[in-house]
Image (cartoon, rainbow, N blue to C red; front, top):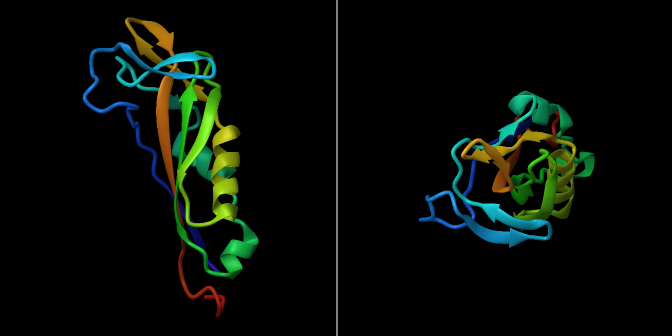
Length: 136
C-alpha cells in the first residue's frame, strides 16, 4: 500500500487587514503579532516535518483522509504555545498533526529586528494514494 501524507504550510495572520506590525492578540504567554517583517521559518523545512508526521495505521486501513488545520503561536525562542485545532475530519489525524507540530522547531518571526511571538496556521493534508483495501 502506498501512502502519501502531503503537507501544506501557510503563514496565516491572526487578524486579516492588520499589516502595521502591531500586536493584535494575546496568547497564554502574552501578545502575538499577525504581521511581521520576517515570517517564522520551520527548522528543517517541509522535509523535516514530513519525517515527523506519522499517518495513523488504523486511519490508513479505514481509508480516512482529509485536512487538519493546526494553529499556534510561535514564541520568540521558536517553541510553540496555545496549540489549537481549527478543523479536522478525524481525531486520529488530529493527534498525528498535533504531535508533528509539537515536535517541530521554528525560527521566530521578527519586527524591527526583534524576535516576536507570531500566530501561525499549519494545514496538514492526509491523503492516501492507490486502493487502500487492495494494497495497491
